[in-house]
Image 1 (cartoon, rainbow, N blue to C red):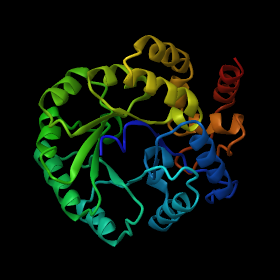
Image 2 (image 1 turned 90 degrees about the vertical axis):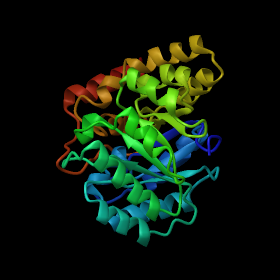
Image 3 (image 1 turned 180 degrees about the vertical axis):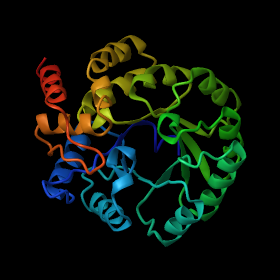
Image 4 (image 1 turned 30 degrees about the horizontal axis):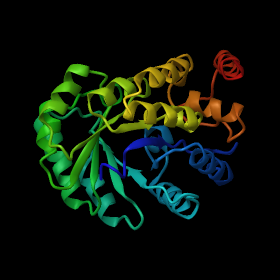
Length: 290
């Protein structure tokens, strides 16, 4: 499993048309663009894919489309998660997992369970899932943090193979690395933290920026994995100028604007998200042209 998810995974956006229906032509262009850019695997129906506002039928349709339009036959990770464990387990059981390599599941949000509750939640999901499970810790979105101790405890489950860690807490990351099994994979969930996380033992990133900058992200990660931190940091520095604008008006508004500017797909998002302000559009255009 380490080899399968080593490198750069792209947290794919879900392109929409002006009527807010899924734009499959744009999606196909995005898949091709990322494949040519050196991406190592696809992540569909994650936060960046606006999973909060796509229904189950759309999620299945997006997965099927990737399976049928996967130019380099890259591994596929399917995202699902939420605050209702029983609903997630039901969804996992009714899914057709053919051609899916892993499930990425975000820690429960809104109801903010205890660490004991988070452990019980993930154990229930992993017990039901026929493919390996990757944990996802992103406290800024969920309102709660998975502690290092919780991650290490869950790493003992035979069907939980790793974590996408986006806490930005390097003390916590060090504690995970120090105590996890050797075969439990650590993946960066924050583009800007990727290089230092790789230096600590991460095997790559699941990236937002990779949608629009697959070559740069892939080159950065490959350099870091070869311990060429000078080159990796040089690339990271260039990306750092545009990265804050991916989140200033909520993700994926910024990265969708990037994709519009470079001609991959339009920038429509579903409510309650709204499109980019003129100021954000102008800033992104200037940074890309520069």
